[in-house]
Length: 380
Image 1: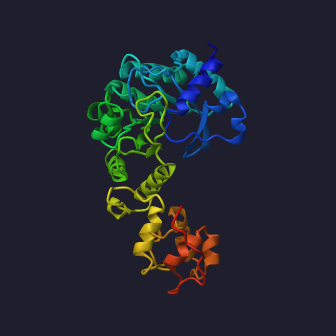
Image 2 (image 1 turned 120 degrees about the horizontal axis):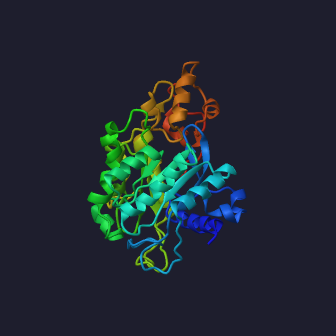
């Protein structure tokens, strides 16, 4: 099989095994070769970067009930050799089609063996091709400690996907995976063993991913786990992937999870990470779910700010972040504008980036409600 065909097939496979949705431009969708093999990541220094997203192999011996690569399923299996994949990436990188690599894999012969092939691929890129750019590695279940250390030296980002909110939920999704032995320990490894790496080794960032819906978990369960990982393991980001049934798997007849549920989880996650909210402040229902028909921040404001609006000329940053339509950058802009003079009208707020249609019902300007308010829908 030609390398180009493998890139296409395994790029398409990786799009099914990704951390978050693949977002491609209209131009990229016109090119079949790049259609599935390229996605984007936002780099803190470089901004938006095109990645080659691929798998080392789509063959797998695990029986995860939701997975298109499940052992025994009728699916075309394709594999790269490490040197072959390294060459394919180098070709695309030299043509300036990509500026980074996201590498995952199915598991054949155990997680450690799968991890060796991925590490060998990256090692070839770093040593033989002298590639110093962005690499994201997915750590395989069952990877050994020495492999995690090697991955930390080679990659800029590592993902260790828990998939289930806890051990009970994982057992319903992937009975051959061990939450406590295979998945959770690697997430804590970098923080716990950073002293074993040389001072010049930049620690990779960490991500995890959850399959949302088919295991019956609540939003509260998912967010409880992620907030713990943010605080204790130094997790950079959690991804929530709404479940979609795949023909030929045990979960083929389970209902699709609403993309809106995924969206609400990301909104709540953002509130916990960047807006100073506590888990207990989020508007969970009696089952531990976030309402699908309302933005969680807007719901909180309707309860807590409707009759106690925030004075924008006096409130501190933490209080400003509680107002719908005001985010971290906008809160900073308000604080900066206040050093130049008082905020007196919505026009001034719009100029510095405030979404006044959302903010107006919950704010005061010099002790007065704004001169007009836009209709404030609960959805969205």
